[in-house]
Image 1 (cartoon, rainbow, N blue to C red):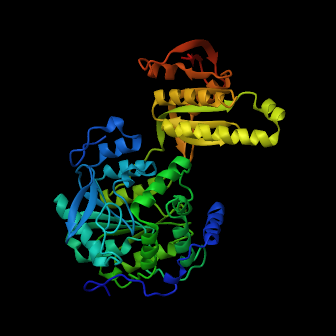
Image 2 (image 1 turned 120 degrees about the vertical axis):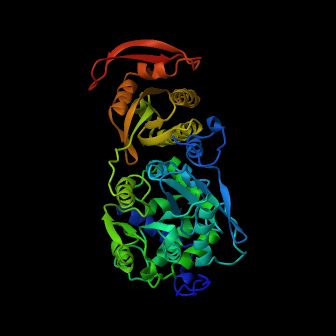
Length: 500
């Protein structure tokens, strides 16, 4: 079926005809969703202090983007430091290796996977920062598989484990079947062999294609496909950027139509390398029986159904169970993976005397004022790299990875809102927080809330823990005495940031 240089072109059937930009389809899917520290492999840049947090992290973990030759096309890739084995993440029809390692949603999975070996990201020709294919042409499966060879050769790697994302089964399976001596294992994540298989639930393939193209570049489709992934405006914007850097809307339309015609069932029996197939049991887009069919088609393949609804296996909250299965597959034992606990600075803000103010100016003007308040808070959070966790009424909860930035953000919010005649109180604390999906909890958050409750109008009140962390920053503080915080043992010394 795949002998020679077979070009993967759609036959012009029903999938190709469905690429409308009908916003009703997108709305249908949105409604359905609502209910349902290491050394680099190559010398990195040394200006990480001036980079955003995620970028600095990625540049510490990974090489700069390099290029491998696939014929006369250059294939972009990035790799972490060398390890006991090479692990290649095989992308589907779009990716961007410059951006993907920097996605905050992948950080936990990336750190865990690099403990197993050298993790390699690359972009197929026609996507990301790799060379484009001939204008107007579609890539071939052979070209896609040859990209893996090119990257491994450029790295001097003899063999690798292939981790095939959803939509990349054909590429991974063809390489594994053609180059078994260079494939130490194949891991298949949320995939399918026959895209024409009948669906018993969820959206049709036509609906998925149309909705994806309609929402392309907004990040929203990735949320629809991964409904349990933590989500806020910062995360949405990051994934939207990844989409735009990975492919244009026109490329997305053509490539999804191509994949919708790609039946690889005849290829699977030719794969004779150790194979692990992982699939989420509640995925409404790719039913688990499709994953079972893939495992049944490969001799000796192991199928594991995991709880979850997401298409991606490398984002919160689903990556841990998936990673443990991959680690056991590669090493023979399943490691313990700790829950996400991070040291962070939490910021609570709320409007002083909001009930009285709302009664004075009336509902209509109050809602307009709240909209202006929210816009200012979010603008300052973006400026100081804070992450909005949640908001209710007139209050915000945000978290920061830098204590000084958190304080300066609180000051900027207070000063900007005063121009609207709004007085706010802000409370901050630095401590260990538990990341719970798109929310956070733990004693650190509890203390931050108690500190905020003791703040007065236009106060930026901080715990002694936070004050001690920013000594030497130029910030000045006024002591506000010792306090007992409800539900927290001992006395806590609080400090107000002095007005300049």
